[in-house]
Length: 93
Image (cartoon, rainbow, N blue to C red; front, side, top):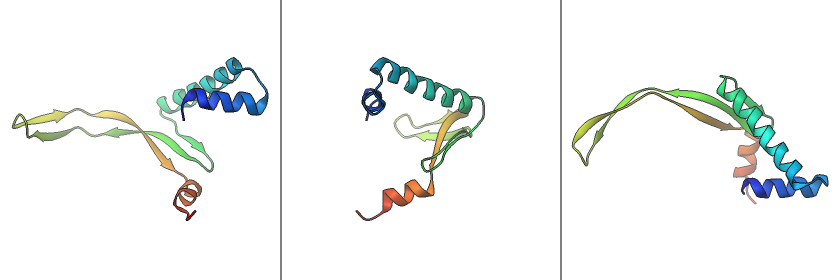
């Protein structure tokens, strides 16, 4: 699914213009991104949790160059699905 697919579904289900639905989708994701980027967590009941994690710096061996390379510390987005979503995904259909 792409953003435009989501916009089309919202516009059709709520009888609003596609431009309004697009603005709503953009606003929701902007709010979530701002909150998570500031160090918070976003919990969506029945779906999961988004949070930031710090990946420690590490060293790897590059087999092509036969050299040790340093990978710097970085911040990554982490998603943990809810139990309900996991159950639904793993249920027998």
